[in-house]
Image (cartoon, rainbow, N blue to C red):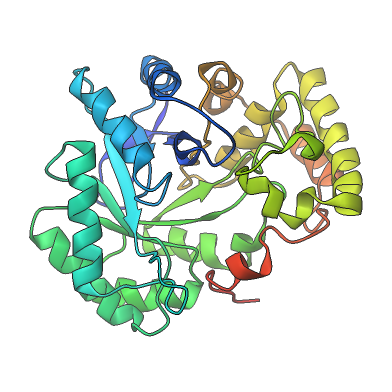
Length: 327
């Protein structure tokens, strides 16, 4: 497994990490044994960077990672997040007290005394970015985190926070069907020496094999809320995706591996975190860091899936309200 640095002064981690959103049941039922098997497969393939959050299954994903660590000698780099609340009137809280409480609960579930990276899961608009950076700096100075990150933010929030205390990583959705970070965020991360962590690099399964069938999505599958998977949007998107799937297979790659390879090829500071709860699915994209793209490959990918090709939004209105916009 190739490696990349987690920010200018951070540790070296595997070039791709493992996202654990699905460990909490976001895409359907799962269990501890299945998640442990996926973690074992990831470690055996050289993945040393795990990404989780306190809201994934209301702590389930962290608990599963913690129970896995108890029975293994593996010591991966772990990133987790906090900031969401259960209060519909104030859905995000970046106060020191709230973030500290969330972090300490995460550490207990994970069974560790610190994490490599701790994100504010969203930016609370009531808290200036400079104050948030100061809060996370304080947690870092206390030894609970080695570095801090921000998620679903705009370039201006990164600049403001980084001026107070260096940001290690920014995590935003990014894939061949979600390209907004190219409007300045990825570039700003690169110029500041901040790692860019694309989540959902497989477009919430759209680049998986087999391609998803939205008619089979059962509650509580997260994708039931995603406009791109609905009705005529999906009819259009599926046709475009099928052409990419066919191209990937003609090259001898899985669509998932090629889509992640495209990202790694494009941005040297990107560390994608594909998510899965299946060791079998992981095998479909683990080869991505070792795929070499030619100029012809890049041109064909741009032709098949040009910027803005996807119909429908990536989030519904309620979810969109929590992500910073800058276009």
